[in-house]
Image (cartoon, rainbow, N blue to C red; front, side):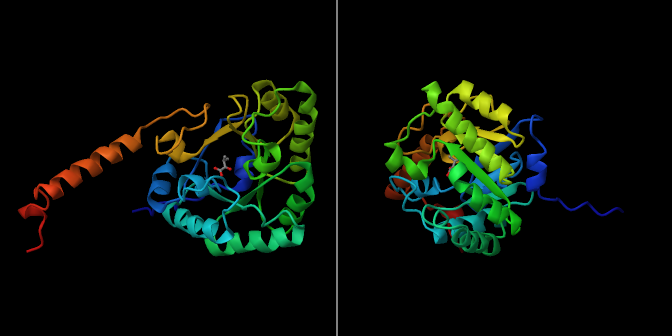
Length: 270
Ligand code: KIV
């Protein structure tokens, strides 16, 4: 009898090698058991700082801490075997210097055992990306609409509506690719700009609200499952309405408890 080959995790270089090939599938996940389901279909799973909003009810990602990212990162790594796990560096943990970024990224890697980190910013973060990659930490970059900077940007605004701004975003993409990022999330940019960015660099672009012109796509799991308590962004396709299913189940349970229909004899320890 032959032993089954162990399942190997997808690696950062394997994601990088998918440039221009089969589209890369990715989702966020913050919970061991849902991550186990996502793991069967996604090439990488992002433990993103959007968890501040969709798990903790925060208004933005700005208040998310390193400890929150590490707690959810550990859960997702425990629940998965196959997908590459990328954990976001939260606001305030990497911008100050490459050395501070390394210390915090190393904490994320050693405490969660994830395989890569993601950070926001283009050309201004190139030196930090190079510093981390040279020291053994695979980095996914994130450009275009960068949610940690919404206080400066004045909200969640689609980028690239004015063609005069395109070169700035393309320069960001080139800078992070040259600095050694293995892939780059391109968020909230108009389709022709997404196309220009994807053409300009040799690493995969992962789009969110950035059209089909990217090498892969990512969505926030709660958004695509109908679990966003607010209105999900316009570009999100809701593939399942779990909010309604959860409400119906909780309502049935509450009614049965109140009418003493639950627990019945079968549901009681004897
Ligand atoms: O935190 C997050 O969910 C993200 C995605 C928007 C890519 O960074």
